[in-house]
Length: 263
Ligand SMILES: [Zn+2]
Ligand SMILES: [Zn+2]
Image 1 (tube, rainbow, N blue to C red):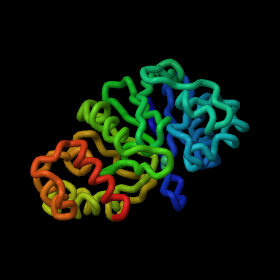
Image 2: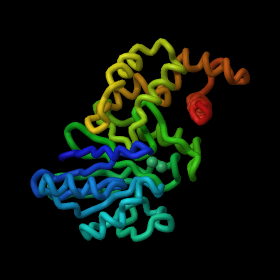
Image 3: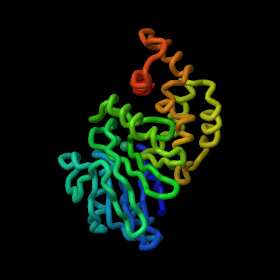
Image 4: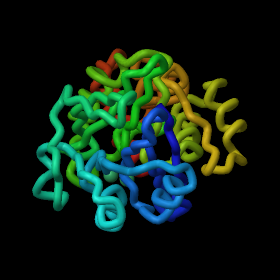
C-alpha cells in the first residue's frame, strides 16, 4: 500500500491523501479538497484515481469532490448516513465494510461518531496498520464537536475503538494541528517530556513532509488518551473545583474537550 499525504497549504491546514495499490496503480483519494494537487500528484506517478472517499460531510473535506469526479469518473464513498449532506454518494459505508483498492489494498470502515455523527475512519489491513482518521483524531489532539457532533460520542469512539488499535498503527489525520495541540498538552501537563521533545522536533517541520505519528506516540502526547494521568486530573480540578478526586475517564475527556474549545 502506498500512502501519499498531500499538504494543501490552505488556511485550514488540510491534509489530503492518495491510497494506492502498488501492483495496479489504482488509487483512492481521501477528502481531496485540493483536487488539482491530488490529480497532479497522481499523474506524476502514473496512478489512476477510481474512488473518492469523504471521512465526513464538512465542506473542507467534500469541496474537491466535483472537480475530482469530473476529471476521473471516480465513485464516491462516505458514511451511509451522510447521503443527505453529501451529494452523489455511490456507496454508503457501514461499520466493518471493506474497501478494496486495486488488487492489494483493503481498508476497513470504522464508524466513528463524535466530530460529526456520520464520520468514518479507515483502517488498513497491512503488516503495519494505518488509520485515516479525518477530523476525529489529530496528532496530539481530538476533533471538535461544534458542527454537528457530540463530545460524549467522541469519547465513546476514542475509548471503544481508537484506544484499542495496535500501538504501531500509523496515524493520518485530516489536518495539520500538531504544534498547537502539543502546546495544549503542555498546558495541561507541563512536565510531559515526550511532548516537549516532539514539539521541538516538529517546530520547524515542512508540513509537506510531516511527521507521521503512531498510536503509541499519541498515547504519550495526546491528552485525550491520557485520561487517568494524575497531573491532568489535578490541573482540571483547579479549573473545575466540583470534579471528584478520582473522576472517571469520560468526565476527564469531556472536561478536556470543553477546555480545548476556548484554549
Ligand atoms: Zn470536520
Ligand atoms: Zn476538517
